Length: 219
Image (cartoon, rainbow, N blue to C red; front, side, top):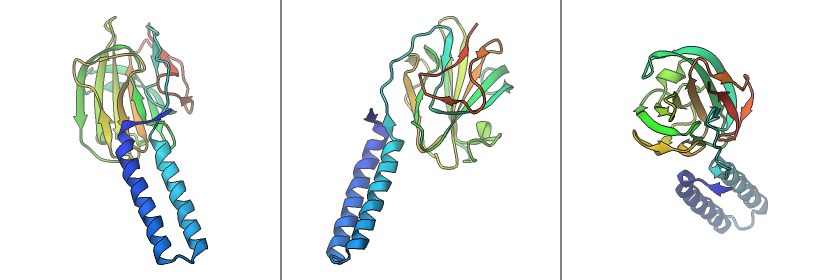
């Protein structure tokens, strides 16, 4: 387990600020032990909560040609057939995973492949489970092309709380299955658009682990 690079600067300055607040109060009200202890306890709780947002567990990268792995930790909230209009322009099976604030926020590649298409879209900050969030919220769209020719579209979607999407890829970037391609701060949603003949291996409300839970099998 390590701390993700996206949180290190924030955690450093938060530690300085909380330490300064506690030190300052100890100088201003040195005899108010109960108040000082409550402020210290509150500071520790806040720091631990923020710290867990940025945890980055080590995983053994999978290597399964036919399996599609979850791109994020979270809960499956959508499994449906839909029309993908941005790039593929065809009907696809969509699996959406909602990431709550207590989940790991690292986003991982569901398959091994080359980034054929990537685009960032500014947008709204509707709650991540809103039906329109997939095409109205701030988001990124990435299309991965497998060596077999199969293409899978993955979409990072910001939510009402998560207003910071990060990505580490561009068109032409090779990705290992389970390899990190992005990060969304403080919860959000990730959509995966699969071929219609893919066999879905998860169900609604099932919990997933990024890079570890198989969500579908390709034909």
